[in-house]
Image 1 (cartoon, rainbow, N blue to C red):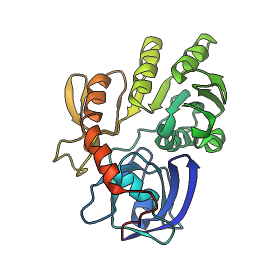
Image 2: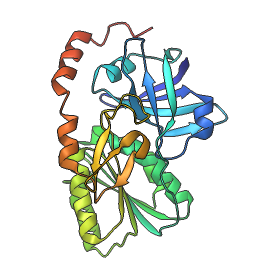
Image 3: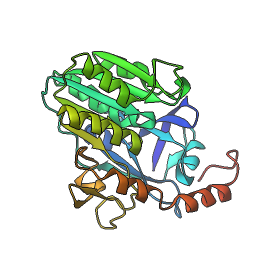
Length: 280
């Protein structure tokens, strides 16, 4: 079992954990993830490895409460154990010297974006960060991103922080101001990634996105995480999770993500109030 050694709230419904996983901490690279299972009858669910400390033997995970498993995770505290943790999984981000890069994150997508931005900066790139959320209190990792980016810009739907509007509009404004980027990493909700990729495609900027479809076994056997990229089927767990953002069929991805929405809501209702006991 893997014990939780630290927990803090980052935003409503969003929690950061440090979990003891020494083997994963030694081997993980930016872009990779782990699969967790909290109880014997529970599902497996993927979480990006946000950071690691090989000396402490820990990895950092950020969890947003969406379904039953993430709701159960929110009830765990330091000292509690995670039943299963498998990783690191997925293909690491290809980190190299591009020059000027832009990293665009929306909502919880800033969590997987942060290690990529940090690695790009460490490789000698000049990284511009653009972060977005519905409102200021939902922004996460703003200070961490400031430390690894040459400059950082914020967009919120309600204007409570930074520019009022969307990250795609903010990126378009940066390009109008003669900013030039040789590479873009974009992670967030599907509509946001689709909109930003339309901007980068028009500007001729090579762009990667990180996809988080329904995932079960993490080995490519179940086919649950299949996505359409360039008209061909790919599996996010073994072929990704990162793909060329200009070739992803975002409309099909959005439909697949909605497939189990009703079942998820029913399961959440059956789970009961948050004060219920955490899984043992």
